[in-house]
Length: 611
Image 1 (tube, rainbow, N blue to C red):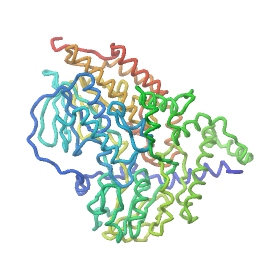
Image 2 (cartoon, helix red, strand yellow):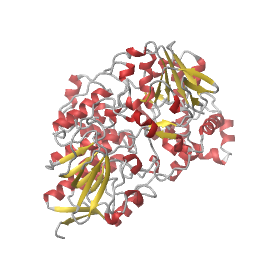
Image 3 (spheres, helix red, strand yellow):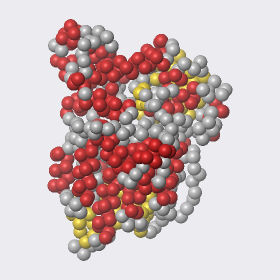
Image 4 (cartoon, rainbow, N blue to C red):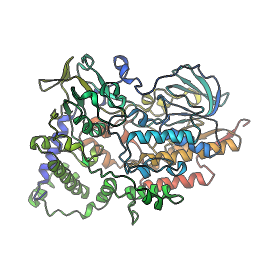
């Protein structure tokens, strides 16, 4: 970025942000209910009718994705075997059950992303495995730990109520189940409720339309990774250019007669560099305890001020972490110094002129250069360049996405930040031009920023009839992200108000599952009926972790709209970024290990049934 003007960089980012601001914020989206309920149906597994359950289990786990599977596995290892997992899907997998669109794969290296590899003896085939393999591994975990035997699939929890007299939870579902559990675990995921863009006329389109997380292979053809043969004579629209779209567009590009990609905001496209895993290499690293060592190494590399000397994963994620750590060493010699000095006089701009800013600017320059090198048409390339700060939106990783726009069948329809104007029975309208299509794919993501109980689909009722939504009116409050005062024998396997916000969420879930299992196993083996977090412990935890207020200001005032900043509106209490976090990711995990390993479980009270 030789002699680049800082003022122009700041002004361009601000202008692009302004284009995308909307007064309705997250209210611009629709959920898959009412007239769109048909889009929420399971296209992958037939529902099996059954009689409602009226029994009792020791532990009920709501959610059968990574969180629920790891909780179930760790409970079984701890000797607590009476475990029932309840999930809306037709099998285990969670997000990997629902997201089966072409090209779907993980963005974090398989050795640290896939849980329980060492325990199940599985060797991933690729550095970044694809969705079918991840789904198969979820099923492997379910079989290995015998979690299928008591699972309820195609079942949505609709109510959790604490019965003080019985000291049990009552679990209700949409299939008429009403059973009791001594303990309940909620592992529902952050990105689990699909949303649609609230485009005028969306309900009028006459052709097939579906969300990427409910991919219609009956229409497109081939559900197992081959060409989408049914699309060869079809004009297809895909609305959205985020993570899901980045992965499936290269497959659509070569399958359709014509593909229209409707873009509001381009994504940052980083290098993927996927490759097969060499079994001989894997055999050399897979000595006892290998996966925990890789997890700890990755967390330390990503989050610690003093990372380990060896970076085992060594990918685009860890390179970015090193970039932020070394930001103070970035040279400013390629900048227009007069412009830099003039810009620094502006109080608002001066807030941005920190070491991270210059590292960010240099990195985005390399991202733009990659677009120019990959996309032949100059106008298309210019439209695919992201104009915002690197940390503002979710990063994506792909080595074929940009090249897909060189296909003669692909047309990028950029909306200049405004989004699609309207949808008609025949197609999609942008800036007064109607693009007639046979099918619409919505790559519009998932709900973020709505209340957790809305996303869960139920509102647990704890002691004294107090609802969880009441306790969390001003944002989530927990200890370790796991325990909530006033909700005895209930646990959350997630990371908000708990772990560190870094790329490998499954590490957060793994440590959370181990910790919850340790508490429940201790209660069961010692004859404890009730486990409850004290108010003092919750208050203490919440006062000692938190987001840097400067970071919150940056997200709100400087970032382009997206789910990271509540679509550019006030970061409300339920925003993903209104979370609290431990300053050092590996430090948090070590804290949890020491806390559960001591056997004292500080902050929790244990009561026998006769106390």
